[in-house]
Figure (cartoon, rainbow, N blue to C red):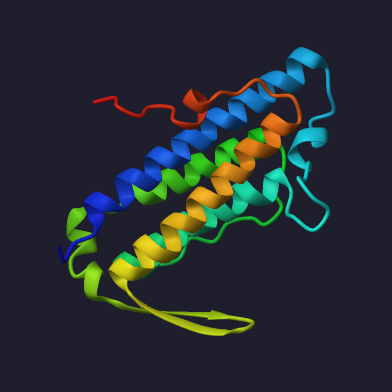
Length: 170
């Protein structure tokens, strides 16, 4: 498989839609219990872990980075201050529009692209398929799962079906 479109863009879009669902559940919980929204959007599982809003921002940055790296499209610049449920929801909508603007042809040759990522600790080099399956997807799932866990830990009524929203449809 040289073209990673079918195993990347639709799956990432589905997981971002799941994240939108979690955000909606968090917002409804805040409204129902007359809570300060920041009690959830700034919630952390542990002091050295990032809060809920950062988990959402990172998940969307991962999606835009994937589009850039696998298609060569220009990297979308996103705000690093989105923190309310409404802002986070709108952020996902913006990223979904960008993700859906690419089609299968844009991913031609993506499995064999060389991808170099620079970090404070050094560089990581991948082929496109290795980047997708061993870097992007585990990170995306990690941040969405952490967002789910933050809401659940703080009293939002969520089930596994909320995390799996839309699975099996189609």
